[in-house]
Image 1 (cartoon, rainbow, N blue to C red):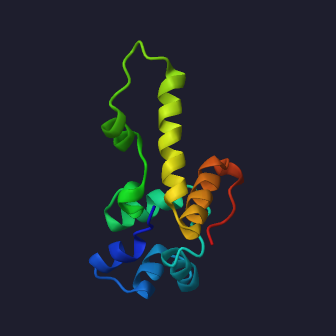
Image 2: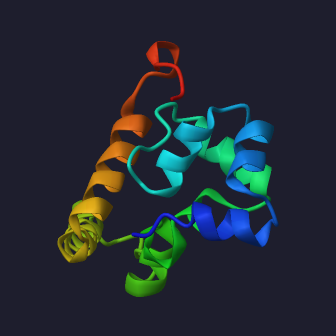
Amino acid sequence: MLFELKNIRRKAGLSQEEAADQLGVPIGTYRNWEQMKTMPRDRGELPRLARFFGVTVEDLFGEGLVTPGTLNEQYGTPEPQEPVYRVIDKRLESIERAYESMNENGRHVLHSVAVSLSRDPANAPEVE
């Protein structure tokens, strides 16, 4: 998985300072996001970033993001008679293979996204 924020910002013709200012976040925070030192902590921040740059959340992560669509392309849409647990097992195996192929930084980013998505938005901390 590769966080593509820097490339997307450059395509938009913005400097880091301009993007941070228009997003209303400190420049240090924005730089950390681009360098994958930290990830947005609020799970609503990734969709907001995507909307700001006119891309999808999936686009923020490049081609390495595993989505239901890419899994369906790889394994096909599950047949109605196929037990759900078999479909889940296949998809978990794919996710595990993708995780194993990531470098430490990619694993950190994936962990940050998973933690962010698992938080109750009512109790989510402020965005860094």
